[in-house]
Image 1 (cartoon, rainbow, N blue to C red):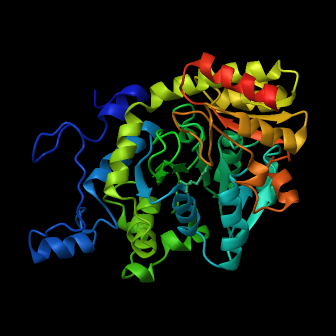
Image 2 (cartoon, rainbow, N blue to C red; image 1 turned 90 degrees about the vertical axis):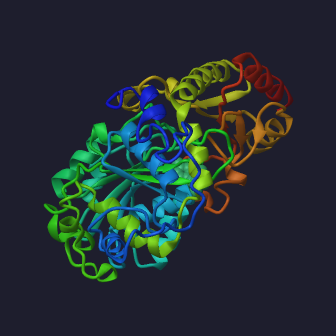
Length: 429
Ligand code: PLP
């Protein structure tokens, strides 16, 4: 069973059987800051990474470790690192390999918070983002130069919901020695980016993995499938002595441990310094969420398909955005990369534009009006006046947000109740 390849089994069993001290079957919440060292030699071995073990909860924790191992197994990766939020995960993913003067190439189709991080915060740090429309994967090659450290994209980016060409861009990157980092937040289980050549996965666990709207968290998963050493000069941060860790060369230091240079460096330098650690209590919540994730994704997907079909036949709706409604190359990508469903997000535009959008949202009774996605409950929001409001109107349009766009995150309630609420709110719109 420990070697199962089925996500339904992995999320319940990988990385933990029972507690070594108490035999507890549920993963205990190790609510501790510190861990007693066995001896001075043990302590110095841990700090020197000669032995792996617990030092301090800002850097590692046994509860969090189970979450990291489970998600690693679910994705078929080498190791994972939990962080305080999805934002902390995307920030760490880039900063782990980019310094001032470096650049990275990102898809234009991004969550608004990630867009801000890349366009403003990284810019102020001297790290340049180069945006490319993923409709043409070759744009990634054209934007690459010798200071390009990675490519970045979302698998199922909301609001456009155009699935990203993972294999095509990963291959371009591998030929140039550039790793592809995929934010897979919107479609865990449905897509496994490492199967298509991605090198690193980013998650906001706040969404589907948590699944119950209780906790903010994030994760990075290292595929262990990218040869950082072979890419040589492109990754001085991994291939040259690191002054922040007594001259460790990360690709050398991990040789006895496995292909985990990227994630080990992120843990023992960036997480150590940023302090953006996930709390053990939140890790426990995410472990609970993970246990039912494959089952919930099935229901999110079947409900969302039904909602997309209902909306596409409604007279007040001018456009439905959902992979089930796409055709051509966009549809081919959805069918290639999403297995077992099209995800739980549905976008649509109303005949009456922004005012009709607001009336619709105000009339909802079952749906919550919130800034989240991936909750077991159905959620709705008007992005132009909320999540994407800090972007200029031009940047909003570039990320796919028109004035009248409404985003739905379809929950796991009975489909009849979801459709009834949408119907009555559309009547009021
Ligand atoms: N990535 C995606 C695709 C998201 O939708 C979000 C949040 O909405 C994030 C990252 C950021 O995650 P968090 O809110 O956990 O910081």
